[in-house]
Length: 251
Image 1 (cartoon, one colour):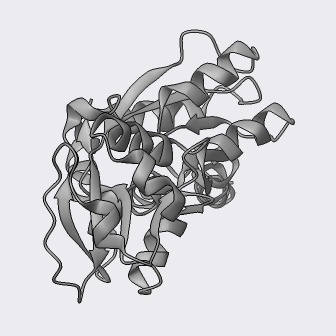
Image 2 (cartoon, one colour):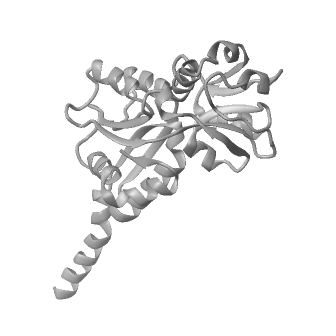
Image 3 (tube, rainbow, N blue to C red):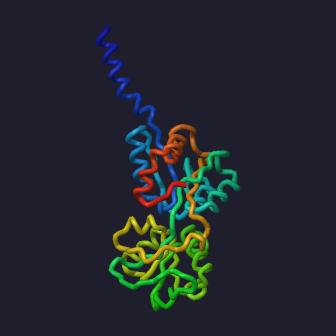
């Protein structure tokens, strides 16, 4: 009888963690990939729950959520698309938190040596020449919208607009520069840090564009439990070192 109880206890010790583990889906801005993958890996190792993360432009993800995609959490690269899903009443009230901040930079291929200082009226169009400047879609994707706002504030958007190679998200814009298909690009600092094929030419002044904030919100399709725990994990002080290692600033 005692042996049977011991065997039962051992069996339960193996079965219960698996039974308790939950899988859930996170929709996240493309620029979060390396840092959020690292956070998810650490969370799974510590808690046993697995986050399946779908990366894309925040605009595309918001539209997927509106269409009924079963995500538990949404992390956008701007406030506009979080506002959008909130206005559609697709979020859990009171779950929104401003998680991270970022910076906007001008990049060039790593082998490029062209110097360029960002300032009002600076010669970006002339430096681009017959080439293109890669940036996320300036009409919809947060990184592109920030870039357009900054170039407009600096008085150079009209001269640069005809030379824009609009990409579906910021990582696609990064790839165009990394492969040498565009002489310049506008991405987040964290993107530039993730790709050795590019170099940072200069940083756009923060006052020329809206603050780059990454809000997180729980969606109504989420089950309370692992997803909520992951949201707390990402905002906890213990997560700061990982975020900062990948270049993000805690809000």
